[in-house]
Length: 290
Image 1 (tube, rainbow, N blue to C red):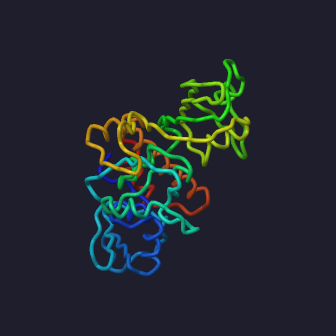
Image 2 (cartoon, rainbow, N blue to C red):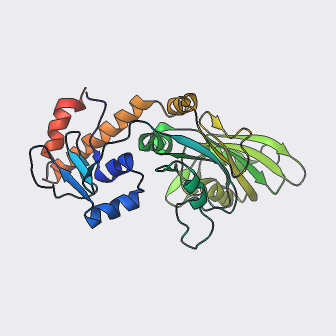
Image 3 (tube, one colour):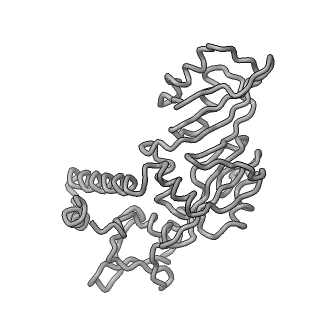
């Protein structure tokens, strides 16, 4: 199989080839700034942003040919409190804008931390790495430190419930591990590992279990920890750190296998709708089983 380029949605191709966000890439296409040509066809292809780009397609933005980047950068930030971990805060509060302006162009946050949560937030321009870290199938550990404004005794059943599962709206949330870090008569510190990534999951679990959570801090993602990185500071990862991060997700081959499964599912669903994607079918016949 040609592992250099797998068919990908146009919006992902734009993210992989430019410094545009997903939303800005969609806007650029809607404005007509982006044209896609299939080989041997003289006029642009009519398509949607979720249609597939193949390796022999030509994608132009403002008449300049785009190519997916071949090198990537990944960074870590020790996120302060009172920062919304999005590109734009809808209420005009402090968000990631100032950090992103200082970082290399094209990077984006890998997931998010809620506004009051501090700690490790990754940024990258490698969409495949971001997807591998966030996808639940890859089971990448995320380690959190919790401050509870109460004394939690030995054998408290609420901690076991975090492991066995806490019913929340639409799903049952699990912690991969829960351990006592420190406690006094008035507070308890826990270390909790997640392999899931639902919105505000730990806060929702604590609320459901009536645990008095007052501060939440992400200490590590996979093998990476903040170590001595000051609050509000960021730094790039070196190549060894990026490789160890990939290994923690199961590796690049696992990510490729997941993308191939998604392409096969896409082809099957198109067939079942009576709208087969003949180009994708041909690609899978040639490369998809190798």
